[in-house]
Every structure is written in structure tokens, then in C-alpha cells.
Image (tube, rainbow, N blue to C red; front, side, top):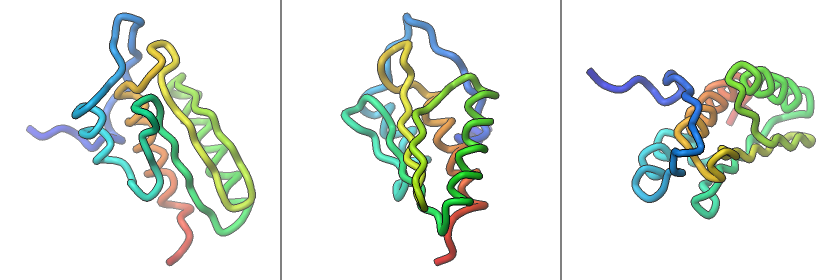
Amino acid sequence: MSEPALADRECIACTSDDDPLDGTELDEFYEDLDADVWDVVDDHHLEGTYEFDDFRDALEFTKEVGELAEEEWHHPDVHLSWGEVVIEMWTHKIDGLFQTDFIMAARMDRIYEEYAPAE
């Protein structure tokens, strides 16, 4: 049986005994994200930039990301501006990336599908 899509996996809290992801583990999770949005920065955190046609859509997306963060108790840094939302995310407990960061990013990609500007 194959693994569920990254966005459909359960967010599992890490412990301080867990190590941050590195090397091929990072690559495996990253390949399931929207590479036009997300970057892995210094093997430490994810940074994503979502673009919008207007402020209202950016604001509504930000609200949905906030609700997701509250549901999963995993809170990214969110920077809202006209036509753009920038997300920075990592697991503070281990000062690096954990699978939950990638699951959250994949869920944000899914939310964004509703707001993405028409090409």
C-alpha cells in the first residue's frame, strides 16, 4: 500500500530527542511541495512565497493558514503584504525541520489552489 499524499499525513509532534531532518530526508519531503513556492533555507527552515491578485485573497489565505496552525498547534511566521504572503516555518523544539513542517507546507499548497491567480 502506498503512502498517502503528504498533505493527508498526520502531523506528529516531535520530542527534544528527535533530530532535525537532513540530506536525503529533506529532499524526499521537499519533492512533494510546490517548488515554485517553497525553498529549504540552510537545511534549517522552509520559506514559501505565495502570490495573489489582491490584498483580500492574501488576507483570506492568511486566515486559513492561521486556522490550520491552530488546529495542528504548529505555528509558522506569516508575513502578509499586498498580493503576497511569505511563510517561514521550522520546528523550534529541535531548531530545524521535521516531517510536520513539510506536511503543513503541503496543506498550505492545497489551500492555495483556491486562491492562485489565473495564468
